[in-house]
Length: 441
Image 1 (cartoon, rainbow, N blue to C red):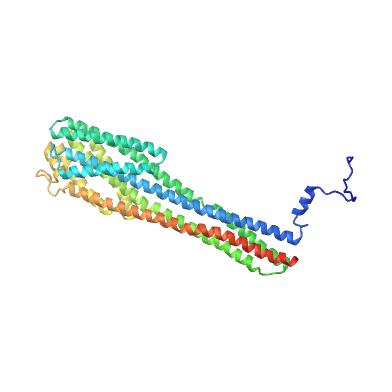
Image 2: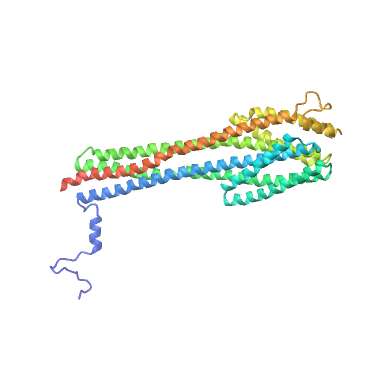
């Protein structure tokens, strides 16, 4: 029986060596033989090369996915804004048509029906790409939209028969339209947050690539120096090539990543911001147009609608001013809208001066013998504003989509390059260090 304080021996009388001691000696760099050291270095380098492949692929893929998410959120933002513009535009058409007192034209009816159909189709489209939170808001918007359409039809039916109650239906429809617009605005806000959150993720995505490439590069440089000092070999071709590949991955990989995120940033701060600003101005303009008609419908009790007109008009001025000064877009729409606001002032002067019929005539037909000399046709100036802003939104939205696509396209080949580069470095490391191992055989 082994006693405390004695040394265990083998049958031959030699001291027994514990498994831990053997493992410790095996893992000891100083006591390890050169082939063992070389094999250990190969194992470490191969592991780091695998980390480069996986970490690089992960970083690039994560950045590409984040930019794709930002593009999807941006597309959703533009589409929701388009739905909001159509909804407010439909309300402006309905409100102005009501002033015709039963004489709604076929063209007005067709234009209104076209905008309503666009809202219905648009709500379905944006609902398909909505988040869970946005889906709830869009269901509310759809319910408000159905209610709004019904109220406008009741207002139209009563107006045709000359019943004053039609005005009440039109005002109620306006309130429901505001609720619809508020729902859509919230979805727009969520989409903007989605763009920002995705871009933040894209910016953080390259750390794994940088860390993996730096670790592997350092290991290869140290390995080359070790071989040069230990074996007096100044140049190991496979390891030198592996080092160059790793350096290329570090510089080109980070460069392509930086270019992709830079392109995406330029899209967000350029075309997307421009489209967003002009779309907001466009929607606010139609909102102002609707408030103008409702001010006349209220017949002396439209102070609240005039306040709404001023609020919407301020949004137009601010948004278009920012788009023009910062991005050089929407400048022509500013002049067109100023022409419309000048006519609006003339309409208010006529209405507040007791000449309601002349005010309605100017608002609906574009002219009135009682209007001040030189007054522009509000239909012409506002239509010009609508056309100019529509072209800007369409063009900038297209540029934003192209920009996001360009940012992601460069990352597709980079993902494959990361996998191949890591595999190539691992193979070259095995060959390079293997040359020294062969010397001991």
